[in-house]
Image (cartoon, one colour):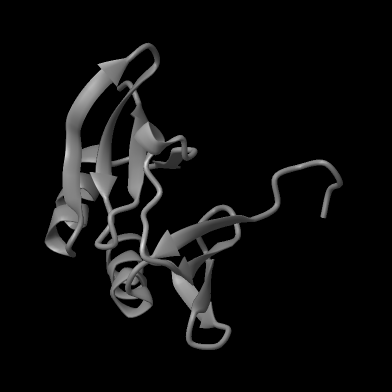
Length: 117
């Protein structure tokens, strides 16, 4: 581990089982449970976890936006919808790429981006 570098991120989840199922199916993540109110995610590019909470992480409430990368943006968008996520903002272009925003089943906002072809 490197000192003074982002090492871990934690996000709220109203339903740990529901969020675990969504991220396993839509993104291929794996999980390790630590009791009934916390699960750590693995194989996600950055280590982190979900903690049991009755609120959600949304940028408009001051939370950081976690952005994932996909080389197949449209396919990822369809997988998000198929497995229970909801599209918050459809695919749009920005300098250097394209992205969309979605809410996971517990209401946390995420984004997925891809380089311009």
